[in-house]
Length: 232
Image (cartoon, rainbow, N blue to C red; front, top):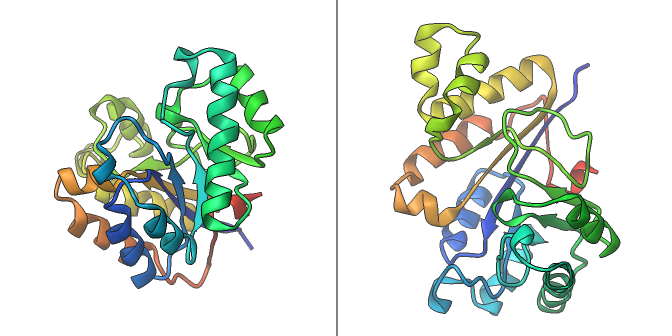
């Protein structure tokens, strides 16, 4: 019997994660929220408060996303080590749980950052590499797709559509692509990993589209639903 695994992850620690968490609960989906507790890309009032973060951690896995959300290759090795280690410590203090998963901000990292993440005690680290359906490198873990229309993915979409024009046009919409990818994994086996940003979903008014996808991929009898950390 083919193994079919579904996992989801959501980055940054924005306040809209509260709405997203409720939607995930409504459909019984597991998720990992990668939180940057002092994210410098947003105003403080747009970030989850510590009580809100604690609330989400009761139902979902919390992963680290550095302390302030820098692109790791743009800062010194010592700064990177501090961002990686201190974010883990802060989140463990807030949630009272071990933090064993990490996500590279912006998907930017080098080999030395992989080593820093491993040395800090993380057992899994997620990248932003898409169109993958396996998990062979736990500290450079790929994903299947992002809940976002990437026009730069035209060639990858065409390949996934097996160069069938009608399917290619349909898959230009991320929610249609998400459902098609799910069907492919159910048929062939593998890991289906959808991820995104709650603030991006809100900015593009995509909540209804996201709910349609959640409804489609939930409660399937052949699927094992896991957090990112449970992929290990």
